[in-house]
Length: 590
Image (cartoon, rainbow, N blue to C red; front, side, top):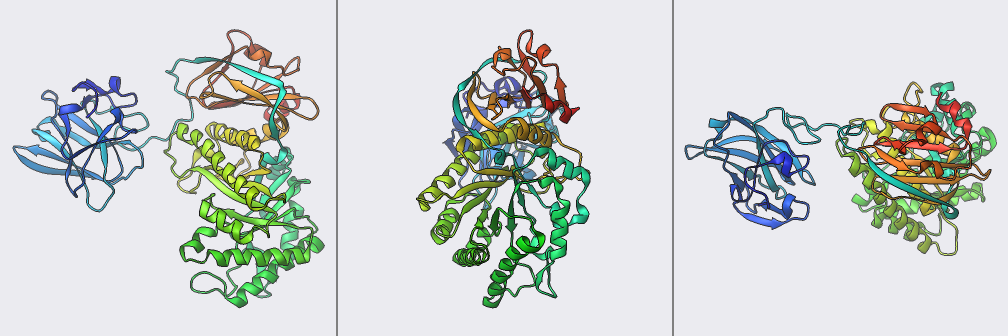
């Protein structure tokens, strides 16, 4: 099956494979189909068209006391059988259906139990699986990279691989050439603490204030229920005002106020749409909130964002047009109450073209800004490298929606906001990278791309919380929170052209603020140390630049001159390092 010698050592032949005997070619022959597969090891994979048919037959080594059977496969479920004295003996199934090739542990067996050979078969009614190799390991402790010996997955590492040798690179920055603008709105955040003044803490407000935010999106799925009184069928004005009064960290930030849905007490139909009377009442209710915010709460709302991630629900029942019509009615009502208001939405779950095009066709003349969400992964076990690669996919989708908006609203300035992003789109199980140095690397990569694309703003999900927060539930600042503190202070201004020789490992953000202070963020995406030669000549125009690093061992304030001396600036894997002429950042990390 593969262009490898039968019986070769898997760890030597296939990087990341478990140690053991790799069985390929005639010793791991396809019994049904052999197909070309660019993702497969060696470019070929075995599959089977029929239900419960063999994918591969493997003849085990003669010598050895016991072996763990590892199979590298993707797609549908597989089962292991052994051939003992001519009889097939059923062993366990693996019911996973991975979209890309993964190793799975099919069990450990004494050599006599493997008999004359093993067979791997497919299931019925599932996608056809593909197998590109089998490894039999005599070492019970052996396991592939990214997995444990029992076949369960390991979480992607937070620390780089200490066994890997450093790579050496050079970087160039041309401060005379402009690559783009990194506005303060790129460093925006989502917040929901404002919903209840009793949950607001001085520590959290101090953190928000340290960001000097210029864009804050207020979003909570239950906001319409929490902010309204079902008995009086109107807004809880005192509660809303108390929340805004306590949110001192907002400062003069522009507020995106998201109206995620209608309150549950409004009459709805069986398909989830509002009744005609319920729709009328909801439209008037939102109009009253405009007046409440202006005349009683007295906190300006820069952007009224209508609804949140509703398009999938209503597309499935063929009611997407109802959703767009509701948007148009809400738009008209808000403009009636405040002709200067900016109204938009619809907070797409992600930029699915049929949703984007349907919304722009139905609402393109009734929108001042367009918002969408995007995340990198749904799986805490996805590799760090695959997560980093998704930064480009998020950018491609942002570019698509920006171009679609420009085309549909030609002649008008319609702002574009990615107003939710992070690594994982599912809440559970908790994604630790939302708060660690790996998350800081991902976020820096995304924000760089969105700034270069020219988005009007980005708001990270989320300012506070154990699952997503820049600070956790007790207001402890996480490593991603430190990135936002540093970035919102030092990386706002004109972006200079900056490039590393080894771009796959190292990315740069070079920014000159309006006051002339220059800063460079060095983003090491690699799983090993990168040494930057000539880093002392980056043109920071500061006699003694400050160096702050966010890495696996924490957030460190380093002696810049000492670090820049010697053979070069050493950047540990999975880290971001800020070199800046702004000495005030020292107070942030001490």
